[in-house]
Image (cartoon, rainbow, N blue to C red; front, top):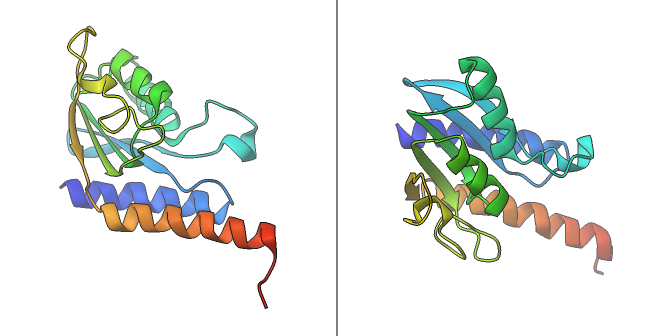
Length: 155
């Protein structure tokens, strides 16, 4: 099931890519069904909090009509940052599954491990590396294309 739902998160990431946003996608799952979707929309909405995870959390909370997301699993193509990891902990998400690790800003095991910190009041189960090559490949392609556009063509 992890691969199936990560493929849905990848579809959200591809939509972000098509919108010239950093291609990160997320889906929130409860009871085997997707109840929230999100993709990075910081640039298009001029909202610094519009990360894929935050959008999926908001949609899922609206669906459940509850800020507590007990029993939910978030699938996200890139390891959550500190802000998103804090939101996942605060909303009591049960499990987080991510594709690509983020050694520069990851807060689910790479740079920080907020989601499993025993000093905090809630912990999430974390599974990493699901469809990692696909998730990281999309990000690498996006940033390579950005660099090429910025520098111009090489002759």
